[in-house]
Image 1: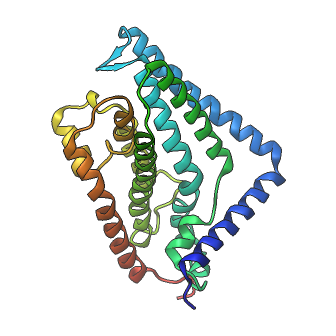
Image 2: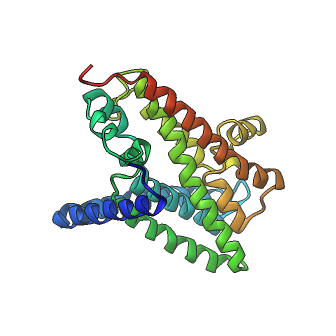
Image 3: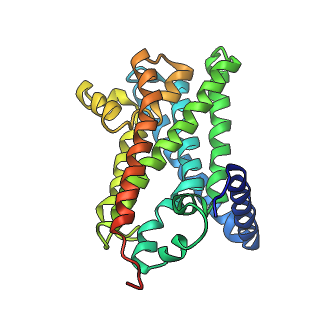
Length: 272
């Protein structure tokens, strides 16, 4: 049975509805998670604001409100990724280890679509609203000229950043097909490695040397995740970086697809 694009869209909205109903069944837990997430983001924000103030409102070329916009962009990207991708992709190792992945394979839909979209965390998504508010406030303080084109490209960069984070995390989690002990709840390299890599992405690239920036742009495109959309709105972006951003995501998608296919061939069913 082959699903059309419209059927996949309909299926995704069914996932969305079911996850929302599940969240509303435990409203107290949902509210507690939202509050905890907001405090964590405020901690991150306060840290950078103190740092900028201590450096005379100039953090390696980033002013106070430019830095605030950078943090806002990071919050939007991170919150959306955690909401839409994290609880899906990072469950793959446990699905493989326990044999539950068998039940995904027997369903009459694309297995990668199922493993990538089944769960949505609405508590994490509400953090993105905080990021949007911070972004609007910082732009108002900077008196940046806003055009429809600029905002549209910024949103496109945000979507591209989230997709890049998904692809990098997906490639790491596919290692579960090769190493059984890759567990999202443990301390094994792929899970910890993703957040170690993301540590580089959520910092302004000016803190790194030119060699490191080149590596984090053209080899592992971490600087494209936060730095690119933030700089597009409040600073300048090189033409080479813009062109590379159009190429790198399709390249990483092709790489992840190939890695996924190889991993599926190595997968041994729990019943085998």
